[in-house]
Image (cartoon, rainbow, N blue to C red; front, side, top):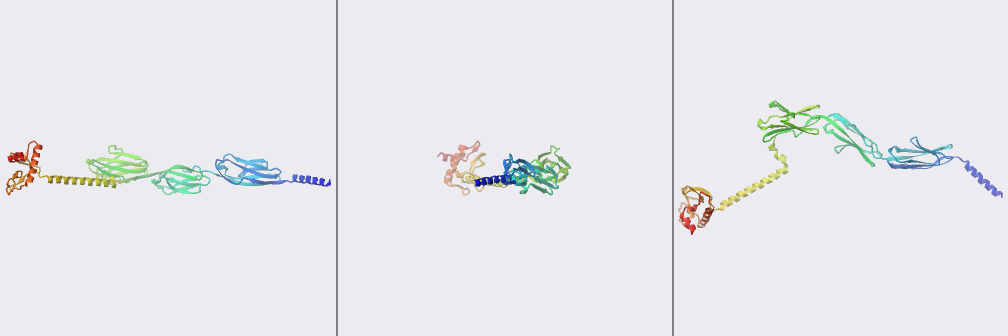
Length: 416
């Protein structure tokens, strides 16, 4: 009975002892540091053991975000942005003490739209600085690009600077600043305008055609130039205001003016092109090029080969045609010449001549004895000649007499 009473008193004392023990706060659980993508949701939990209950707070950079008297406290972020990136601290305190633990939150996001120079106007020869700023997590790769060519770039930086010590007309144009990391890409553009004095291009020249003389003066400049053609020997100056002689075309910073003169007025010895704007004045002599000498240059090597092949083919055809014609003429036994004999009429046939140049038709007579001074043919040739006479009679033209029409002996031979 006494033992039981002692045990009961011991339990009561132990319980009273635990109830009277006071502890400072102790943080027993908190989130680990984390990386999350911008736009997602996240919750932070802080669990505290203390007696009595502690005041629990969530802070970021000494700014109180949330607090409560409890054993735990949860901080919820509905939509995370780059502003939530940083160090978060859980603080627990009571009258017996204070405790805190921290964690990191890294918010990953695509680069911002880069900040670049405002559009710049520079005079040729001046120095220009191009700046590009952005922000992203992780730090992006930044590049400055013109005409699809990368001019400068940096890796894991938020700023890029491009220095141009002396700008020329080639630096004129649109520039792009691009920023990229694993979470996205962004870019911005700006214009660099370079003003410069006139620059003559290679196509500036004169050419002579059948009836006219044309001189082209092509100039690149900013702002547009005033172009004047001068012919010193004639004391003549012509510009695009002289519409009868000059017309101009513009394409960007390029201006082409064309002077047209009639060839019958004579070819001038010297033609000058003078171009001027606010930043300078330049003059150039326009050289003459005979348009007929430029044919091969215009059609190119392939065209030249094609023309050569055509000429060879035409030449070969003409040679073969001539050979065929000569062969046909040499194979004929009757030469189709025209002579005058017998009452002044034209006679077609092969003529034979004696030593005195007199015409004979003995070759048409079969079996006839010929004089030594006359060149006669064989009997087979005579029959061929008779056939020719027959053809002549069938196809003869008006006023033409065939050789066999006046020798009666030939008629008797043909009748036989």
